[in-house]
Length: 246
Image (cartoon, rainbow, N blue to C red):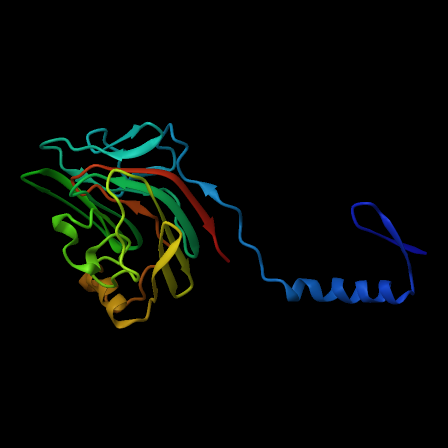
């Protein structure tokens, strides 16, 4: 009797040492290799907002977001306020990659592990915000990034990037957020610049500060959408891809 193996159907006789070693390999293989995650999923097709809604669950307002040259772009409309948008799907462990661009004094962000949604109206109009951990997007020479913990790719207001970042304005940069169980990483242009665990004191404080008072004693939310921020300045997003991790 013979075993058939390989693309070219090599015949290996049963009972030979090679065949016995192959049997052992097939037995051990499922336990020796890590489980593979699903392949990457496009979150934006460059033409529509399918898969995205306002963070409140309402339809995306054209006074706050538009599609511009294959990008999701914020819109600044006097009196209309600014509303964040989010994915319609929720994610637990994931590897999210995206390209972003801002101009001088630009400020935006990517929110994840979202703990609550705020909606209010002020003199600028209706505001809608996702509250959670934030990958900061900013012109590092602008007023919103004076402190290192608020510079580009930081964990906003908590952990400064190392090495320090200096992304050029008016150019696209590649961002990446990896969340695996209790570990999180921020990447910028192929370099890991932030790495932390969710149980670190400064991170726990950010999560607690973004939760409602009546929910402080409950475990933080872990399966949440991913949100793009409209902070009242122009920001472009493209090549939004996510891979679920096991």
